[in-house]
Amino acid sequence: MAQQAVAGQATAGRTGWAGASAGGIAVPEVAVRLVAALLALAVTAVHVADQGGVTALNSPDWIGWGYRVIEVGGVLTALALLVPWPAWLGPTWLGSAWLGSAWLGWAAAVLLGTGPFLAYVASRTVGVPGDPGDVGNWGYWVGTVSLFVEAALVALSVGMLLALRQRPPSAAASGA
Image (cartoon, rainbow, N blue to C red; front, side, top):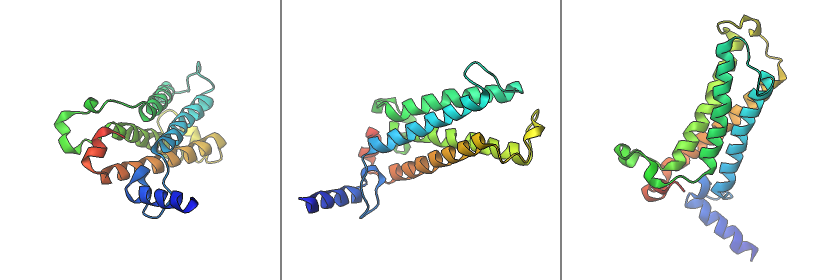
């Protein structure tokens, strides 16, 4: 019985179920989506905490509003990853390049992780306008947590986008 289950998992892995490698353990896509949604919400939580709460706005104002965009983007990305969108939602002008509604959530997750990561690195290396005091401040633990969460989100999302590109067109168009 156990051998049949392992064989079924290996077969599912070879057919591209949740992007598993041939011979690897297959993981249901819903579990991968849930992990990514939790990482997106963690990006949001880190930025709310760093800003001093939901009602606070970081200084200078443009950085505070950038935090707001990240916070709202994290919630919207989590929703895009968890809520099944209809296949007709995709742009028809993309034709076969449209990888289904799943593509939208994973692309949003890549942007959500990459943007703050690059902004943090820029603020610590060359500095950003209005915030010269953070140059060289690599010891800020909230920023370090944010870097790890964002890197994990980007790695997972890029992996899933690559797996989506390898799916047959009929499976990718359904967004499953």
